[in-house]
Amino acid sequence: MQKPFNLYAAVENIYTPRQRYVLLVVSLLGLVALMVVGLAQYLTAFLAAGILFVVFRPWWVALVHKRRWHPRLVTIGILVITVVVLVVPFYALSSLLLDRLVAFARNPEQIMEVLHKVEKATGFRLAEQLNVRQLLLQGGAKVSGWLPTLASSALNFLVIVGLMLFTMYYMFMQETYFLLGLHRYLPFRNETLENLGESLKNNVHANVLGQVLVALVQGILTGLTLWVFGVPDSVFWSVVAFFMAFLPVLGTPLVWGPAALYQFSQGHNGQAIGILLVGFIVIINVDNVLRIMLAKRMGDIHPLVTLVGLVLGVEVFGLIGLVVGPLLVSYFLVLMEVFRRENRAHQHAQAAEAKAVVAPVPTPPPAPEG
Image 1 (cartoon, rainbow, N blue to C red):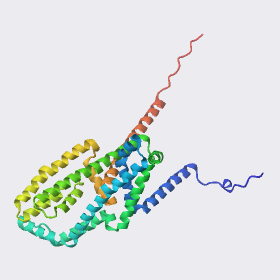
Image 2: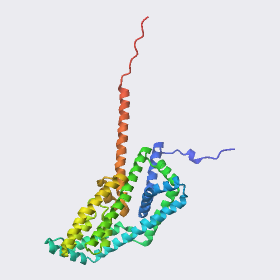
Image 3: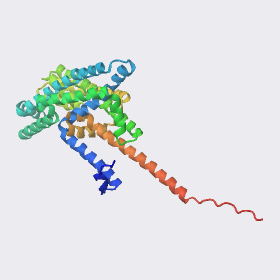
Image 4: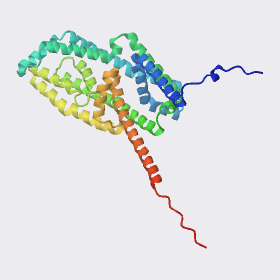
């Protein structure tokens, strides 16, 4: 029986194997870039899912692998905890913060009145009214940009939360295939992947668990301090202090410092001094002590890495950038270290080869005569 004519076998391919390999890699990268651009609006959902996978994986390992609980039951429990403990409180706090900031930006009369009183009490001209209004409007627009899921629509927020939970479900239910896929398709050696995984774990622990705990303690202490010393809206300023506490060095002094100035402007000098004393003696020291304790337990991240990562991450990813930003900076440093190590090993190998080539070959002794 005659074989069918193969048209493709008769046509000569114009590319070399090397060129086909390069074009294949470029095609893959181009498709990945298209997918990232198409999913850019919902990228925070997948990033949050990966972060929460790292946070909850010790629970998963303890309950599923060690105690042999049903995987689906444990996964559903993790999703319920995520919604009740993280999603709902975060939505409520963010909504409260955003609504009040927008209200201050649209009606800055209260802030202007306080500024005028501070100017009269101190004798310094702090700001012009027009400049303050512009700063408030710019601040409200900036915060709205950081909270796109809350500033746009409830439907968008529900879609992002749904994608996050859906991704988390399959990451846990197909944990083995997910981790094997990372090792198979990421272009790194196993040692590099272990370094990246350790960096991810340290960043998540330090910037999620540790940082949230520090921010929560500082926010509560700041709110209680302002409430005790008679500052209005202490609950709202406690929420502001919670978010401000993510900023290294500055943090909560941006809240209780102006609160002390406000009390000075109202003539309550004793209450203002009390706020400053509690802020400098208690709140700042609690922050330092907690950070040192948590750094030993949850991963030590350099403050400069955190600061640069926060500026980068919040600008690009919104509030989820509080974690993603420092992670990107840490990954950059890890990959630089991997490059240095690989380059040094390659240089040593080249030096050994050159030494072997240059070394003279010993000549055999002459044969005895006779």
